[in-house]
Length: 309
Image (cartoon, rainbow, N blue to C red; front, side):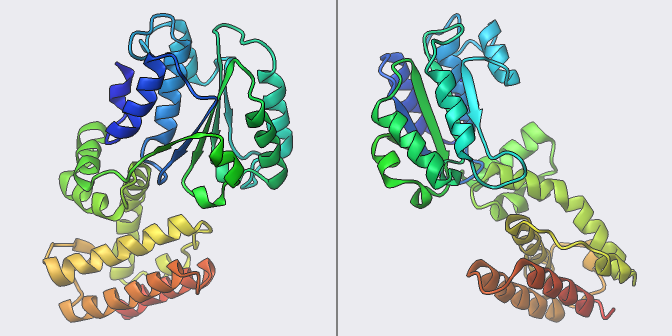
């Protein structure tokens, strides 16, 4: 069954699957948990199960409806995310969706609305959603996904069935990286510890790892221009990952004695000192004491000083 594709969330899956099997879906669900732990996948699997031509305990994953949902083109399943390069979900988007679900579903007996980032609703958009939840359309289920429930309108949360998603175990993330994404075991082990229980964050770390290693190798070879020309990431999450990778690299050399070719010229003592400086930098950044631009500049200077360039 398609539910088996959701890893590490047995409690959340049981709750949603039980409601589906008993044909007692709530008018609205609030999926709460960190980014990259399966909230979106669970919402998609529930939408497929509801729309499937041959459902048993879940979606068949083979019929025309399941395939349309997998491609994101099913007329009864609507996704709501920030658009137009902004970080919020606007009132116009919500009005369009609510207008659409006020009509009968095209194919099935129910429309599904997946709001990916419910905490990003503007005040106007949130209030518009609230009115819909107070008098929900009988043929619609709203799936509200959030990693920041404190930023959601409390009255919306009170009208939705809350399903909690937990951070994934590091061992599970490691196995998924190796078996499903063909990552090397040593990299998967390290990244799984840095990902804070998020598979999407682990994948992002893996993607940037080779570029980061190449950058360090250039600096180690005396090519300071590699760091000087480095563009500081604008996103906090991306810059935080660079800090995590930097600390992990230095820690491996200084403490775990893991061979790091790009850091070979450095002494254990200098790596320890640099690791502590970067840990302090990360703490200040996490506590909102420093701007991303300043943190990126200090990170660059730390590496240049470490290599005496």
